[in-house]
Length: 173
Image (cartoon, rainbow, N blue to C red; front, side):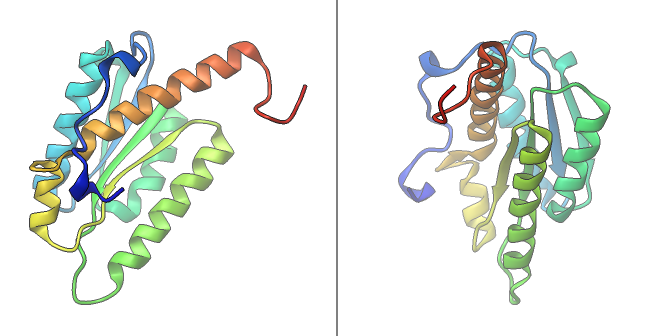
């Protein structure tokens, strides 16, 4: 569903697991700082709302969105984490740079998550304009940082649940 048809900050509180005792990495791109820091604020507020201590949030900044996978690997290698949230913003410009960066970041985070077993959350805005970015970083379409935090909480809980049950998903026993 297009984010213009959905509020990125809207979710059912009753469906979100408690984050108490869980640890999260948060990797924030410095490029498009006003946007990414608004995403960060929404992310942190949401994690705190659901019981995550600020001591269990391990935050690093990287120069741009392209560096998010490397930053995610570094923070996950240094701390015992339940999920890593990557926040960035790549605004389409006059060239195709946005396509290359977005594809590289998505592929990098997917591969890192599969290899490490730690959920890597793609909280990267990919708008056509700065106005669209602002609309999705606390503006009229909500905040993608909130959505990324909710996804991290749910994936961390799923990971914990499956580790405890030691069962496979849909492939028999």
